[in-house]
Length: 261
View 1: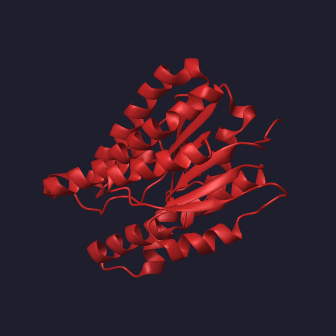
View 2: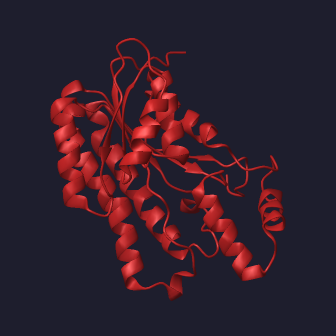
């Protein structure tokens, strides 16, 4: 199986921790030059130093905020001008929880900006380099809610679905350029996001953390939460030559939790 990504350059968003950092590490292990992107310079610097590195590999980081799309697009364009990007991992922390009907309009606008619009400006900035190479990989980390909406994540459910539709459309448009576009849908994963979900459930139910976690895990056939590296490995595979004929797909990595086929 050809998993070699030597000579490729990846931009990984939300990469200072969690799934983003795990994906960056897996890509680095496959030989990719990795640039990490997130808001906190200190965390990025530390994360960058932990990435596996072979002789000749170069890793770096870019400080940017997904909410500031003009600045984000500029930073991505400057990066691509110096070192063309072949792989883009779109990954941003999820919106706050709560029912859809109670959310402020501003919450939808903010989530739309941080997720779909941020993803879009990054694709536009990096697309010329992918087209020139006639090779590219775009992987969006979204949520199983694109298939089965999750209770009390109204804004997230709505925006994640929009990102999935956007990605499917892109896959149709960019395939002729040798570019694949896919989505990875994590289930319950040991990240800051699961802490947010658990705390929300604790507040609503009054139950202790251990009980909430046990109840959530009971809905997963594997009876546990994923580790970030398990999601990162699937992301890295989709970027590899071995996955060159996989495009336009939304792939759940959820321990079998979803009920749909």
